[in-house]
Image (cartoon, rainbow, N blue to C red; front, side, top):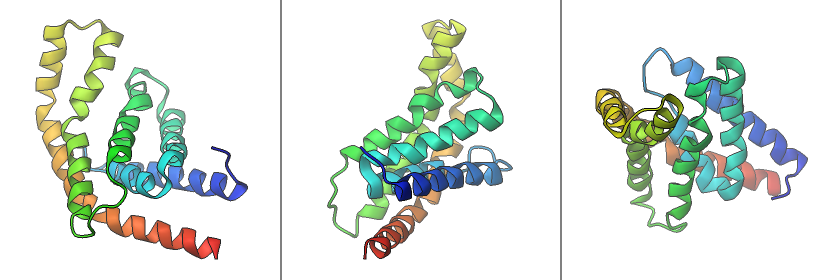
Length: 171
């Protein structure tokens, strides 16, 4: 996956946009555009979407600290990226928004479950303790999933905008 200078610049900017959006939306717990951006970037850039995604992850660590809470970020966004990579590239136009919004919502609903293995390993939690940790976070995961669904409304417009920008640049 050799990158051009333009791609390096674009992916750095997209990762920075992800980070800035997270900071701006931190006033509302578990409501953000990270899933929206992850899906949109994956639809447009496929494998190369990992560059802006991990630019965001690294920026998050740099500015918020490379602490234990950050370690699951090394795989959490890759799970969403992988789920989108498994979707058919050519879906009927009418169902695309709903499919993307649903995948985005599922990632939010399952965020605590996906985060739990790292918590269990890092803090030596038993299976019972891990399950209790997941259950305690369910209200936040519910909010996360619902907000991801509605933020997912922006996925198709972002995909269209990115494709237009890519097409314009290649002409």
